Each structure stands twice: as structure tokens, then as C-alpha cells.
Length: 224
Image (cartoon, rainbow, N blue to C red; front, side, top):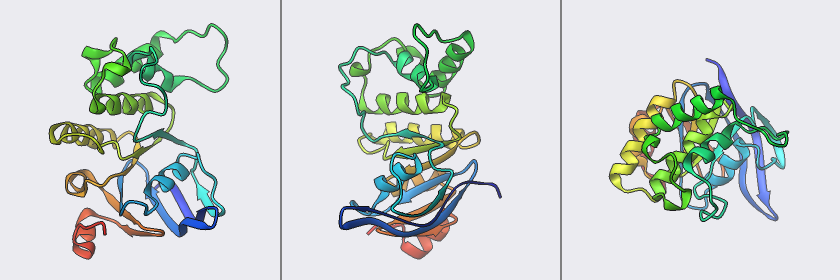
């Protein structure tokens, strides 16, 4: 089975406090892996290491930096005048963008398709500040979908969603895993286990469960 990303004896510390230590695991391509664990256990740190936003103090990560990162919260002012369509198109920008850059017809078509799949076509011209939390999360996932990254690293995109919005998100992610490797931190274990291929329990270090059934059998589905 092809591997999308692999950690080997990874440690990451904030000063004298190590958020993660002795972390080793691999994630197969075109799978959906759930990161479970208590608050402060290191899930967000692990997501940021996968995305290449952090560099480990020790150990090796193969595949780091090849992920499209979807944060739990937007890290810019949602009052900024950008539409859903413009946000999604940003997923195709390179770091070496030329002045007066114009998106190609193919790029615009890809953005339209991503918005359709994310259920955002009807609000493509709406400002980001006018969206609900669930709609903003879907817009960020659509942006990740159009990027060239093969891995999507999602930091609790279901954190503030109601039951219906979360169910809709899970359905979308279940469809996307045939195209992208998805690694998602979540506290809503009961909801996400139904779409997961693997579960990694994170609490300072990691324990890997290669099926939701194995996780439920050995941990009872709990995160404590």
C-alpha cells in the first residue's frame, strides 16, 4: 500500500514542554484518517507538522509540506472583502505569482466544480463574512480541493457545526477520499468513525488503529 506521509520518532516541543514525543506512524494514500484525543493532547500540533507549518525538533517526516492546511478558524479578518469564489481560487495561487495575474478558464472551471461539490455554487459571490461557520469550513475545504496538494490536513472542521451541517461535511469528505488523502482532527468521534479508514489516538504520543472497529474495541470509542 502506497504511503502518503510517514512520521518516524518525531518530537516537537514548545520550550520545555513537549507536545509530541516518539511519534511514529504512516498514512496510506487515498484514505481518511481521524486524529482523536483529549484537548491539549497534540492533535493541532500534529496537523501543523503534517502541513509543514512546524518543523520537528527530532525525527523525520516524509511527505511533510505536501498538504493543504484547513485551520479550525479562518486566520484572517472575515470582514475582508473576498467572495467564496475568490477564496477558492486562491487555492491555485503559487508563491511566485506575477503582477496582474489572471486565472485561466481551466482554473475557473476547477473552482466552479469544487464549489459545486462543496454545495457552495448558490453562494459563490457571497462575501466570506456573510457565511455561517459550516459554509466557511466548506469554502476552505473547496480551496484545498483545487490545490495541487495530494493531502488535506483538517484541524477540527466540525468543531462548531450543528448535527445536520456536520453530517453534510462528513458525506463530502467520504467522497473526496478517493482523490485526496485526508487527515482530520476531530472531537466528534461518534460522527466521524463512520467515514474513517484509520484512527490515530494522540495524547503526547500516538497509537494507531487501522480500522474504526479496532479503535472502538480497544478504546471503547473514547478519547480520554
